[in-house]
Image 1: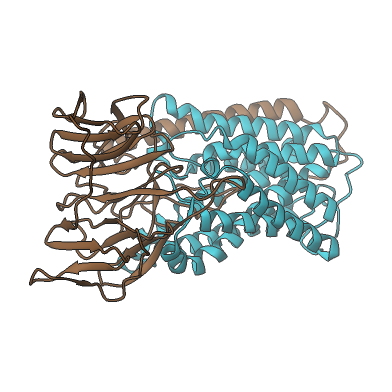
Image 2 (image 1 turned 45 degrees about the vertical axis):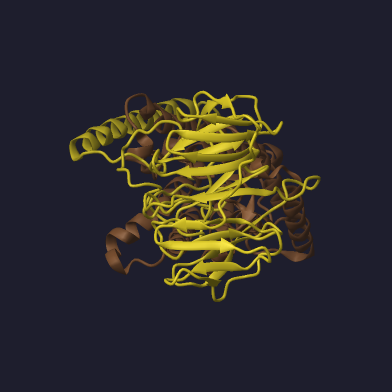
Length: 302
Length: 289
């Protein structure tokens, strides 16, 4: 649920006018309004291949496929070659983002790195449950953390240190359950405050305000996304999906274009002319069509 | 006044022609600028639709020949002008209040209230300016056991349907507790205000006007068709084709409920419940939903 006024998009006649997307800052990245960045997601390679794990670093992309094959690319994911022995892709023991360090310990406690290099439990943090391991912290929003509990509940830590439940996924239908959260990622350099969350059913969701509001950020992507990796060097987020490797380049959230005064005036003039013309045409039709005398409705009061 | 009787002497076709011709004009004003401009960027609040319907209404009140068109045109003015005010209200508040602008959810509440006020003014004008035999029945003074039962069943059905349909189709993918706690105290009442406005517009003013000259079934079909078509105007990023048939079906059901219960309130309650459900459970998409 996101209510703002940067862009009023709604279903105001049937649906509320309140299920709005917005963008108060309208910035997923540091781009400028009017940028024309192309598709939100585009497929890079490995179409038809299920990718279950993913790691990126600059032009190096390593993926693990559904058949447990490990492939590596040195050209940003365009071409891959098999890795001998198929070494598994493991996640880092702890997350380093900006000047902060975060970790979920095996019991599900959220630990934060101190200035002395120790890891201590973050005050007020929830117990995420045994096996919880998904955590992301955007360097652009110091103190903000998004972490996923073992039961799938998405928690967020606000910049002031307060923890809250941020997102509770709903069942896909009466016959299907709640989709699994498969990955969460953010840029560990201050490029963007966005946090991306992938699911096996609802594709990718993104928050740009530290987990208060979420947006479905899935245009083009398959519903099943198993792995995400934010690559600051490439200013991109890679997604391992049921249909290969996809990439999202940092860009502005969609918004109406801003016109210069002259361009705006000309466009308004054109729109006004069309409006007056269609109104006049409609009036002519109505006068011709429903004028008294054509049928007997003279008894109607005017 | 529970249900309006048809005006015995008034033919149905002037009202029908008014609706068809006006819908075509509004559609043209909405879509033709796509050919040479970017109407969504220039006129995102579709002020042009309000302008067209006001021009038509002004002409209808200046010419006695167009008197039969007035009831339908008043309904269209309520729909178009109040929608523009609702859509542009938040920006208007920001322009007027600057840094004192209330939070986004509060802006939507105030815009929804403005939408209802405009609708109520047009409804009052309809009752005052139209000949008695053409005045729409708004069905606001009756509720009753039948209305309460229909409301309960309708809300249960809408919740059941929302859960049964695939989540991705509806965007009903998750609850956002932080946002709900922050916004629902504003957006809940806003949803009720919007539901009341829109039911007054479509099932009150428009269907009520058509019922005075046409059989009830046709009046319902006509208002539902127009209700569905108006959703083409709602969204940035182009027409929302898939929503048109869905909203036509919803409009038909709500119109049927109003006609069966002789009350607008069950439709308002069902509509508000649906809107609140959307507010709570729909995760917005990049393009709005």
